[in-house]
Length: 120
Image (cartoon, rainbow, N blue to C red; front, side):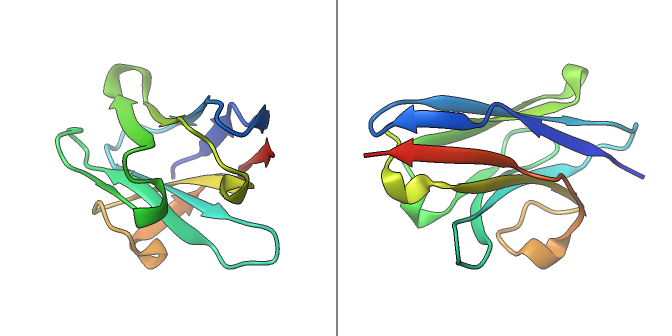
């Protein structure tokens, strides 16, 4: 069993930055992903990273603005978000799975989410 706890969300002005963190409990090493759910919309893929951290993949809306990374010694995955836009406003979820995929169904464990609000 893996427990995921996200932190780092908040209110930021457009153009600003935030860094989200996700701490994963448990000894198993998983691929990690970030997803987000904007108000009134479906959950969408943001980024994923392999167990080693070598492979990363990003959703088109965040490519070149967001960076996913991980520190396996701290069992933590990060999402650095730069040049934030109002359309980035969403609840951001951390997820753990066996493969670094853009598909939410590939992830077995999910955090409760952290709210990110970007004002214009």
